[in-house]
Amino acid sequence: MPAERLMPDNESRMLIDMVRDFANNVMRPQVDEMEANSELPREVFRQLGELGLLSLAYPEEYGGGGQPYEVYLQVVEEIATAWMSVAVGVSVHSLTINPVYAFGTDEQKERMLHDMLGGTQLGAYALSEPDAGSDVANIQTAAVKAGDQYRLTGTKQWISHAGHADFYTTFARTSDDGPRGLSCFIVPAGAEGMSFPPPERKMGLDSDTVGQVVFNDAPIDADRMIGKEGQGMSIALSALDNGRLGIAACATGLAQAALDCAVQYSQEREQFGRKIAEFQGLAFLLADMEAAVTSARATYLHAARMKDAGKPAGKLASVAKLICTDAAMKVTTDAVQVLGGVGYTKDFPAERFMREAKVTQIFEGTNQIQRLVISRQLLAGH
Image (cartoon, rainbow, N blue to C red; front, side):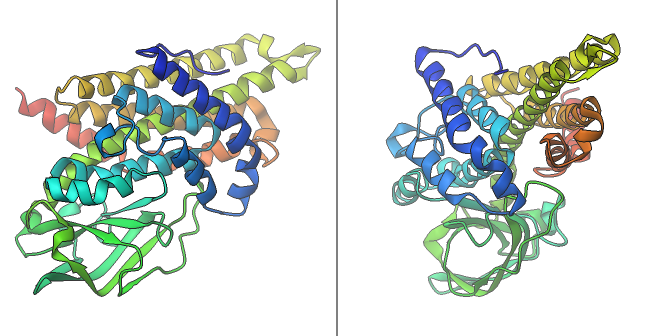
């Protein structure tokens, strides 16, 4: 059943109703087939853009929805209950825009943000590399100044929307000064010298196309650098706080979908002449699943409300990412258990939910990295 929500105003309540209607009528009828065929649902993203759902967390003056994170994240969660790959795509797209909004000049914002937030474009976040996942300071992709351009050479890996995006928020090394040698660029799709090897064959999220982005002496105009030379590390980490909240909301929506699947099945399946929901052992399992989902939602909403209030939210974003994704892994695994043998088949979505949950503990910083971030910030305050 749909999550009970306490929205801040009537506009946001209507927004949630619109998202649920879109999820039921547009996304759910096609998710199984498109996931089975590993198709990126670009048409679904186009429709989300038409509804204004790709730009919710950004100001209206640039074409955004002007919604607080408390509302934006609940929209992402609702999308995830229907189609996790799409929800992750929405979160990634929002993440790609943050550097321009937070660090761009007024001229760059005016030139770029309207198109980025217009609903027709889809972004990619090109940070990770084959030898630089959590270790962002080890990025090797190089950007060499050449007149009024930079020439980019290197390989990015694990990039959502690779080969499909309209722009790539890319981090490259402009000097050998360790973490202070990184810079941020907005690379347009179709730039000379860019190529895309075949996408990864993944365990789940098959409609979230992920692959490498290869730069071979790709020319990028200098006015597409965001911030200053050497500011890339702080830009990347700032944007990742937002991305971690997005993934926390995605994971919570996935867990809610798994819980709903398990509850429905338990009320239909009979054994020993009774609905299996009537057996206390299973009913208690469902209760624990509900507690996990409710706790996850409360955690990311607390972080969102602190962010909306202008208070530091980096540590809370890591807490939310950790709690929500661990909850998703547990709840989806328990959902398969509730369904028993059929839960292990592709006739029911529980097995897909379980496969999709695993990667939430890995991307946007592994949960081990989140514990490192949390502990460092915690101890730095004492």
